[in-house]
Image (cartoon, rainbow, N blue to C red; front, side):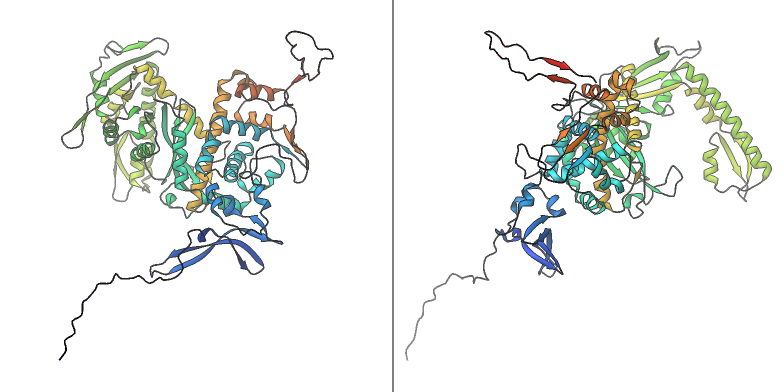
Length: 615
């Protein structure tokens, strides 16, 4: 009997190849996708489903015409330069149309190749210069991945309502009469695709770019405005109530406006029923994420709350805020003031303003992490007293009590039930009303406690500052600059035509708000220059009048030739001087002689002759 003894030798497990390895560039390879009679230049994009299987879809970058001539489409237009460069096109395709795009165009003198045109140019030329002066164009190029076509489309949509104050339905027709940055037709389809291609990342990237242009301790007003909308499927309008009593819902738009640089730096869309006091934490958090530092926020009484006060202290946020005089801390200071001599004792008077003022140091601490205690930095209460306003306010209070009492007497006499007890109590806020079981008014008395408080505080107003070194008058003057933001909202809902949000999808709304914000930056800059310059204010009644004056300048382009611009005349020269913009060559009312001397003389050459032409 033989015994076989074998030796077991472990063998390394070999993995069997499952097929040809995937080429990482395959997803960027452009192929022809035929649908009926249409041929599309496409890439195959796959997603992995829940079952683990790949599902392929086609992404169309353009169309193919006879001779395999590639005609770029919307996806190609609005792709970043980096994304375009990854695409691998077949070598035998005609790619000549790509070279005509501004992103791919070589620098140098390029002749005009399309049909002969003669279009208005002055207003868009001015806004082009404003976009460069404010840095908006450079910021958009960074935000949108260097895509010149997309940047030009955004600027065109931002210019259009400011120049024409029309809806985007007329934009494509307007492009035929006015030379705008965009070189292709912005019809309703292209506008929708453009707005829906703008993302939240684009919004935050724009804020990060703008944050780098903001200085230290810039005064920034925070406020919100309601915006009616036609889109009944938008999420944020569900609880919005239109203040103008129109059959439209509304959203809320928060804007942070720099009173130092005279331009908006931040925006946010919120639900229409969102109270201001609930938004400040969100605003501060997004400003921090965008890189804004050392801002001084200026807020009105709508943002006053104990939570917000403690938030400012915990975050070390510098603030100037208006507060209600009926608040316990302010009311306590007013009760301590001696008014026995007819004027407030221990308050200083500002002779020019006929205003009394005083400043009080306040102590406030909040709990931090663990046992850490954060004490308020430079927390001060500023109290003001206006004797003229006090007399007017007391008269108004007495008139209101008399009018409300007379109206309630009529309601008692008529014995008619009210539609809403709560609403009736709000309308007659100086009275305490008792109702019968059938909702009719039974009786009333004057709310003496509330009346006494109103009479006591008549003529007083107050503000608080945190983290800033300001006396009461400085705080009041800086807070008074908030009026500029109110004019910014008026500019937004007036010349810019943003009083109605004409979009029906969330993606479209996001893109529209982004473009509105760009337009608001440009319009705010134009307004600030117009407001500061005495010559422009005397000649033009508004910023719209400034743009209207520039519209007569035209750009003429003939096939195969370089474009040329008509002369700048009259007040158009003053506008360029006020903005500090250089008039294009050959358009200024000054001509420098190009004549060469016949005989050459020794010494320094003479300056060329200059001829001042008529304006």
